[in-house]
Length: 222
Length: 154
Ligand code: SF4
Ligand code: SF4
Image (cartoon, rainbow over all chains, first blue to last red; front, side, top):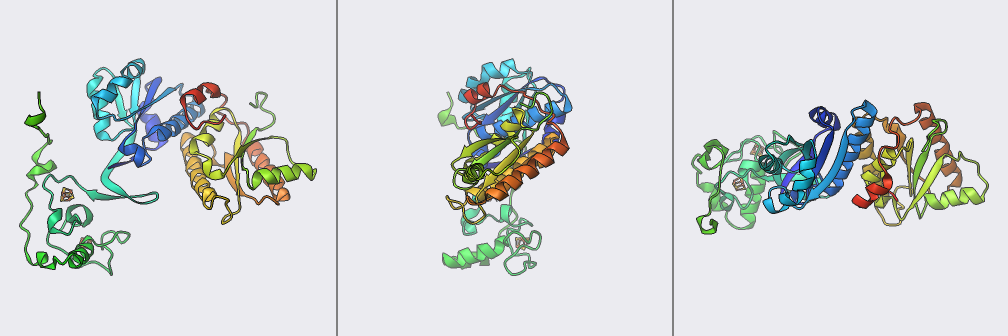
């Protein structure tokens, strides 16, 4: 899922300062699951903004709405009327959701309420970790299912770097060394010989280095 | 709430299994404590969401007291730990919004601790009185908010 975290209230107040009627628009998918931008968080952020507005004499009028998905036209349509009524929208979706709303309402200021952080999973209660950088050419099959691009701090395709302490990464001692994990996993699945092959430099064209990406499926186009 | 700005109004979310019973015991034991609190009984402090506290402040509360079981003795095992985290997050949010975080406090009391409960109420009233009335008067109609929102205080 896409993981995001909320911006601070002072940051949001600064962004919203020129507006009066503000719609805080939540998204019911990834950001609901990572507890940053769903219905409950919309309610919390809205409350905090109302309190801030009152304390600082800002005169915000905050409305709240959460739709199933902000990156999907069908759901955006359901919010159209409410969005039209607002002076500005504070979207608590991921960056894709914010842009989807902005593109569909060209006259309306639309702002991001969250910092979209990474693609990851819920590791344990209250802890999310990054697992994929959407590089566009997945190499997980070569590394026992552990992504060296995302999880090794040095993005080493032929690791380890030699700096790990015990099983900890030397760059982030709070995180495990990805190459330790790769080694252990390949050993467990009896594919250690994979590490004898040297991986050539990765072609980053399929990632962000190749410019904005688009996926076109002719079989689904009308 | 607190229209004449004289006496602070404090909403106290009390767990049914401990603080609510302690408040009851304080009453039947004729213990004196300030009449500023409005008790809201909750099945467990783990049921309390951050927006419950925020809504209470929006509705004009000068302070919010959350009273749960002693750590380690929650009837539902971990409800009071969940509440602790939520109270801390809500305090952070209040501070970011410009309201003193001391207006929100969590305490732990057992069902038999009526004295302690009364003492916590006194402390809370004292803290909030020192801070003065909340600058956030009644800014939303809580009934309307309830219609739109799940989880707002009744
Ligand atoms: S190799 Fe690329 S696509 Fe595969 S998990 Fe890593 S970043 Fe994601
Ligand atoms: S210690 Fe491990 S994870 Fe950290 S940079 Fe070196 S190889 Fe990568």
